[in-house]
Structure formats: structure tokens, C-alpha cells
Length: 489
Ligand code: BGP
Image (cartoon, rainbow, N blue to C red; front, side, top):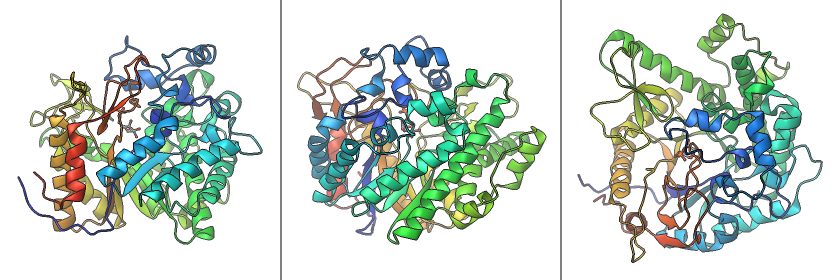
């Protein structure tokens, strides 16, 4: 499979990371503790059961607070990007990337979330980071919240369930947007804003045992509403103050197939996809879809909102739709006798036409093209693939090489479908970022050994290693792709 693609020179070819998965320096230079600092690799839990790993209770949080030195809390050290960022960006610039997606650690700017004044050292770190990117002509794509809100907001405000947190987030985002205004024009308020449903603690700081007398579903949807209001305020602030800025809605896009042509399964797959679209619908169309309002009614969920909320959402819709794509899943109404699996983002059954990774994620390059068409047709707005990659247990050889041909194969096939979709399906795409620049800590399993990067980092699941970096075979492949035309081998 090989063909020549004509891609515009302003198409953004990039890589993506997140603060809590790469930075480390969890308590340095004034940074406060985040919810991510309370998540650890738990070998006793099946790595496919990411919901359990990331849905922790108050006891686990207290254990984390009382255990500041342990290396078990993998996201505290990340891959020490905080101290390695110049070296890493130089190596990424050598690849020829034109975009670098990263996130701002909220507690690095406001250590407790409710502080009156920002932590100047935190602001300076990110200003130096974007200056380094601009030195190499690399466009920053900035996520303002990527699973690492200040822990204090969980313990003293119940996180996103508390409307007051919207105000704290507004203080954080306006401070950062103003500070980086000369360097950043692409902003994403929340990473995978739909993930609050999958892991309420990791995404929104919601701790089940703090709501024992409440309908936890209502807590989740109320918190979701607060995040939508907060995201709309980012759009409003950018549009009113900086005309060159664009703000994106970002969802987890998993292509959903019916397990077979049984109409019950087709209906199930349609309903499953609507659940995810609800999130981008609200941010891109500016109002709650009828089916979600019906669901609230059926489940006696009465969202509390303020009188200005409706107009705020309607007047401040997203400029583009960003999404992560890793795999597809199959929906089956009647799973009797089927090998039901917990696929990566929603429960489903295995698709017998597709291979799967050790973590049960099914590899489906055509699925990314299907998702592009679905999103283009639904919203008719620019799209942006901000995560696509393969998690695998890479091995460093004695002569310090990593022959990750499987990752090259995954990326080549997905990029082929992306470029084909741009040429043949009329899809308007701003850019494509792989997930992973260097290796980093897995969001769902808190493992280091689930590697995604083009650059191997010497570190294991328990924080042992030299942090030394080694370019993988895929590093050279992506470099050649970015620099020598779009011939996909
Ligand atoms: C996405 C997250 C990323 C990243 C990615 C890979 O959902 O936005 O932060 O983690 O998943 O998944 P994982 O790291 O769990 O393998």
C-alpha cells in the first residue's frame, strides 16, 4: 500500500504529551499536589480494568498524601520532562515536527487551586517551554486540563461538583492564556471531556465515598455541566480578547461497530456513539441534545444551572473538534456466549476481523477514517487528531536500539487512512499528532512499560532507571515521513 499525497505545508504534523504523564517534578518550584499524584500502578489489578485503577477512594488519597517519597506514584516523576524539555524538544525538532501538544499543570500555576495569586515559577516554566518550541518553529497546542486538577480542590470543594471550582478554573485559564498570549493560538480546555464518565476521579476529582448519600450519576453529570460552563468561558475569553486564538472541543473518539447486522446490535452501537457525541454536541452546537435531557428526566437527575448558562453555551461554541483515536469497538446488545471484553474506552466484544494489543485495544486503521467522516459530517467544522498511537512493551537492545516495527506499521496504516480521508472524503483537518513524543506514564494503567514514544526512556514501572533517552526505529521513520514527502512505505 503506497501512494503520493499532496498535503498543505501548513498542515500540523506533531506529537502529543500531558503534564502529569511526562513532567515529573511533582512538588518542585512551588507546584501543589494534583489528583494524578495520587494514582499509582497497581500490579494486582488487571491492566485492562483501567476504571478500577483510576477510580480511587479517600483512603487511597490519604495513603498518597502520607507517602511523599515512594516511587510507586509513577506520575510524580513522569519521565522528568520538566528538567529534560530542552533536550527532548531539540530531538523532536530534528524529526521535523511542526506541532507539539502539551498540557499545563493547574497546580503548578495555582498550587491549591483556590490561591489568589499564581506561582510565578510555574508560569515561567511554561513560558520557557513555548519559547523553546518557537525557536524551532514548532506550534504549541495547549491543553488546559489533562487529568491533574489540584488535590486541594478535591478535599475542600469536592472538585468539579462544586460550582465555585468553575471560578478557580477561570482564574487559572485566563492567567495562563494572558501569560502565553504571544506564543499560543490553539487551546483545548479539557482533554477528552467525555472521560468523566469513564473515570470520574482521574478526570474530574470525584471520589465516590464523598457522595454516599447522593446519586453518583447525578454528581457526575452536575460536574460535567460545570466543566462545559468552564470550557465555554475559555472560548468567551479567547474570542473577546485575542482574535487569533482558536479553542477546541476534545473527545475520545472510538469508532463503534455493531457486532453483526442484528438490528438490536446496530441500535446498540448507534446509542453508544450518541453517548460520546453528547459531549462534543454540547461544546460544538451549544446546547444539550434532547436524548440527554430525556435521560436526565428518566433518571431523576435535576442539574443545577445558573440563568446565564444556556446563553453562555450557545454563544461560545468550539472552533474545532480535537479528538483522540486509538481503536474501534463492537457493540452487542445480547452478549450471551460472546467473549465480552473491556475494550479501551467502552465495554464491548472483540471484533474477529481485527488484532488486539496486550491491553485489549483493537488495531483498526480504517476506523480512524470512519471517525473522520462521522465527525466531519456531524459538525462541518475543522478537525484535529491530537492523539493516535500504539502502546506496546518496547525492548531496548544491548546496543541501545528499539526495533518498534509494529509501531511503524500502526502509524503508517493510520496516517495512510487519514491522508486518504483528506483527499477523498473532503475532511478538513488542521493536523495530526501522535500520542507520545518520548515514552511516558500510561494514563489508564500508570505503567511506564506501556510505551508510546518515538524516543525510549530508560525507566521501569516502579520508577527505577537513568531517564536516558534513546531514539527508536519509529523516530527515524516519522522523521523521514515529515521531511521527505508523504510517500507512505
Ligand atoms: C488517552 C489520554 C492520554 C493517553 C492515551 C493513551 O485517553 O488522553 O493521556 O494516556 O489515552 O492511553 P494510556 O496512556 O492509558 O495507554
